[in-house]
Length: 144
Image (cartoon, rainbow, N blue to C red):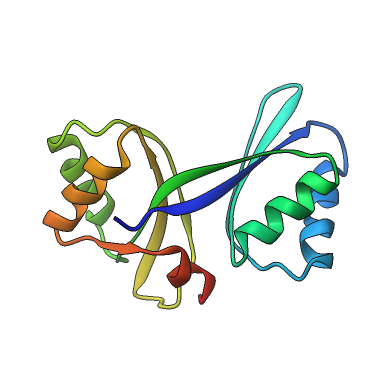
């Protein structure tokens, strides 16, 4: 299985909160590889994959941010019509529940990469492998 660690940071939904997090990341010379921001009226959840997860978590916790680490599945698929639908069909055929996903850029303009949060990483990974879907490791993403 090729699970990747994703960092979630809880930030107040106020001006400059994201800028503060990103300045800490920049000052620590951490490179963000994938990023998603979901918000509610009061707070946001910043999800990111970085090239040095341990350092990022330590940096953010030292600055008193609420941080969690979640294992997700990351994939790379051809950049052509129907490929994401194919992935979703593969997961659905194994009764894997998709909680959320977001796309990020990879090394090739002929492929697109996705972070996938599911209810069962092992089942999802096996289904994707059986379906011929390329799964990315944390190291693959760090080197992008």
